[in-house]
Amino acid sequence: MNYLTRRKWLSNMLTLVACGFTGRLVASGGKEPLVPNERGGYWFLPGLPFLSFAVRAAEGFEIVRATYRTMQPFAQGMADIEAHLKAAGRPIDALCGLELRSADPGSGVGLGFGAFNRVFQERIAESGLLVDGASPLIRVNVSAPNVSEHSIHAFTYTVPLDATRRPAPPTFMTCAFPEAINIKTKPELVAKGDTSLAGLRTKMEVVIAAVDDAMASLETRWADVTGVQLYSVYDVQPLYDEFLAPRMGDVARHGIDWYFARPPIVGNDLEIAVRGIRVEELIEA
Image (tube, rainbow, N blue to C red; front, side):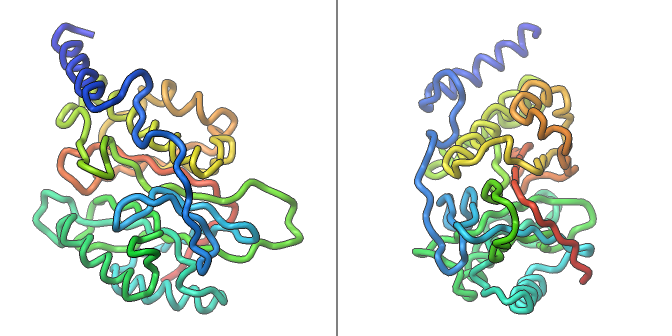
């Protein structure tokens, strides 16, 4: 590490300590209580007004992940999801997560982050999905090539657990956590603008800490993970051995899903979501 890189790294560390972080960088402060969504058959970890940080199936249910072969525009996709759930004998309340794709935030195409959040909250409210005024759904929202409007890539929902299936860990999924601290009060991106390996390391440490905290709240373990979704256009492969491999252990045989996609805010360079799901569907639409 040369002098200038070390100086920037120390500056980042001092900023984090000033914000209340010492030792391991902790994004949410450890285990937090879950809130039941009784109509939906799952528990959720409260986050921001437009998303929850994580969801876990309630007893007697499991979470299923469905991916569209062809992405659906947001409004059309929501209508399709309602029809899909109805056909499966599930209420709209069973919907517990959405994975979205949008245009590049710097392109000037489509709705911006704040504007879409308002549209998103209105649509979720219209569907009767809010719990105490907040969305219980986890959300992934990243920009991808050749996307001009917010579209739905995948969604998750709960179904009754097959009583004949042998006991297994509860199914769960987290939102895509960014490299942000004070996310519930005054979000601040760490190492903003620094995409050097040292900067990416600082970002990764904050993101992984947030994932660890969410999983502690869910009372799940890395050994229960069946998928890791990483979103970045920067080369974070050198950090895999440092942050992911030690946590994943044997789970590493599943590999990770690395999406060459940008988070929705300029200056936000890295997001990670994890899931522990036994049933995954591909929907032809």
